[in-house]
Image 1 (cartoon, rainbow, N blue to C red):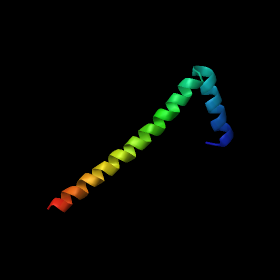
Image 2: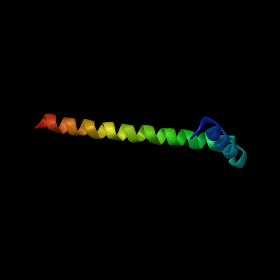
Image 3: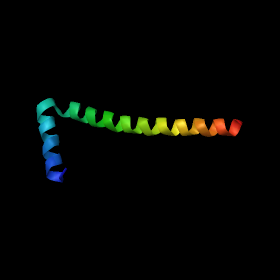
Image 4: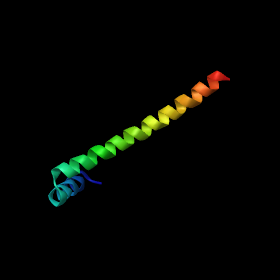
Length: 54
């Protein structure tokens, strides 16, 4: 998506639902991505610990 189109989409969302809701949605999406990466890393750590116990 081009920068201008992204800015227009953000402005449309802000005018439709309000700034706090748009910011909350943005932060929740970022948080979800971070949690997905964290979960993946924990899974790898568990596998590594299981291999070391053998």
